[in-house]
Length: 357
Image (cartoon, rainbow, N blue to C red; front, side):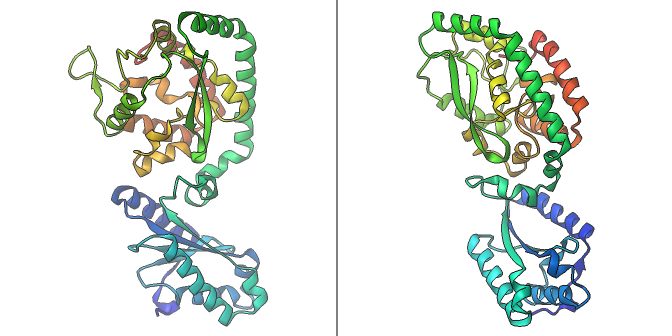
């Protein structure tokens, strides 16, 4: 077993920097890692009796010299990164049991009871509730939970209420036209992936004939994410990352899509809280299944939106990776003014119709 002296205990700044480096490395190599947290503000902040030092000693005695240990949050949480391991739940539980056994042997029971051990595997399992791990793996997203998120939500409610109220005659007219021109429901309901991988019911005016096979779109999406876009009639170098001349679309539906009027019911999604006025477009579950690891970050920091940087910067004429980078840029640099600016640019992008099909 390595002793404490053989392992460098990193400061909070150095450890978090190394933690993010391991995340980026995993995104490229696809080799997961286990991350273990030892948390207790009362025990780890007790340096008077040397308790925090003893906890560090016990943890370092349970890990390898190649693992990384340090302050994840100074005075309240110790982090350990286990690299080059068969990252799975069995290993995580084994490591926790080993560390807890050492702590119980060396510390008073009252101190041990105050310590919380937990482990996480990166990339996290999107079949589970991603909200339970986002604060650990993506701490930048936490900043949207306070005043900025409140302001963004106020803007969403105000804007969507105004759109639904003022646009009610347009809603009713479109609904009547859709109903009269093709059999089927007025609204199209689809399962989409929202923030933290949670699903919700996405609303649009129906633009397709009913009972369509989604296999065509699923195949197209897989190729699009892989970077194999379809060539438009504009020339061999001009890529369009959306299905063109889709026979599943009705004549009215084609106009609705071109003008983006089919998107209007999404203001109801915004009112409900599943979406925002501005944010990344919410993907279909089978899209997320073929995401690369780094693509998933577009669904973490902010809610999906009706419009966003992608919609006002080329829409379907950008590659999928470029779209994701725009979403990540938006999340990193978000301000209320940015949302207002994108909202003001959206009508011009809709009227121009560049990249819309």
